[in-house]
Length: 445
Image 1: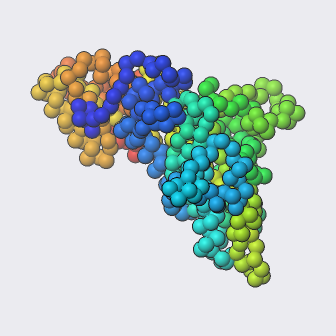
Image 2: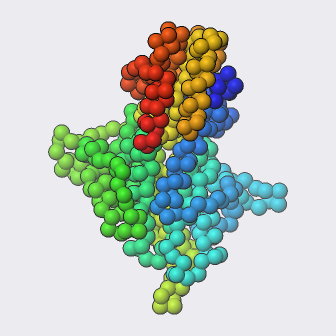
Image 3: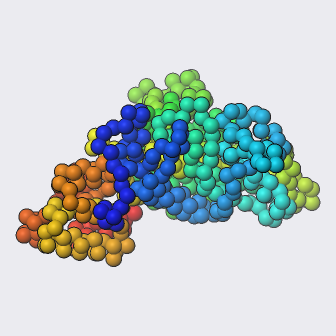
């Protein structure tokens, strides 16, 4: 993409309404624009990152054997009355009536709707296990929406639902989701710590939240510092293996890590003092096992091996896709702007032409652009007639991991400058070598 043909409405000044770094930088980098309190338009750069995050979530869900689908944003209140949650959910639920005076709601979650789909089409244990998921917009009418996409009213979320014959099978689904989430977050350049949490309005006896440590986190968390040494890496996990999935869960949850709702001071004090940590965290996902809570209420039963009808065991598993963008920025930025991890960057590399209109510099930039594109990479070429300082400031603000700078002086020596956004380190390389190095970096992901 050539910047002269792109829509990137960057702001030079910090917006007064932005209280935290991610909100401020997303507005300044032209990624979002507020439409109303807690509701945002996603402008091209922000939308591009959102789609990258969505694709990673899809890939890891499919890898784990889960099946994608799509449910509507509007739901019938009758299903929620059937489960008993319509009146219990509270004012966060946006309740509306259609033209026929039927009670509807803008879905904050989908347990009822997916259970209705399941009971209409599945009747035998032979069709189990089954996990269905979708990525869809949700709405929760927060009393005080703030922090941009971190606590908005409308948000983009992956929610998945498992259906199993027994509790043991459902707990394997729980463990499988934990493994897939660990892999998902690491691909995004995040360390998300699974912490014992409270079930809230969804319910359930087993639940873990995944939290990214950040000073601006909305949750107070308590943990053993040893948990931050754990990484998933490139493990080859067989998701059908009960033992392998359980082993990963035990490894990542055996150390103390809890949200404030489930904090146990006595257990916390058993940790060696030098390893006790109290911090803030941003929730980016949560997994639940809630047994037969919804299947009994809504008569979602299957015929078991003995011919008897039994309610299925269920769980739900969510990832806040739009919230993830804010979490990544909170965890990866400096005073100049965003620093995108390579796995989620909107463009793989920026190209800065220091002397637009110079025949040799223009030709060199065009060649770099073509070479990167041919290799399957997406460069962002700043071909505007702007001063060099302004171009550098824009590239630093939007946070592309790598920048190739082209100028007449370097070209006389046969080199361009390749710069890492994260470290600030630069090296001079022949243009083809710079392209090759960038391609190798992304080939390793």
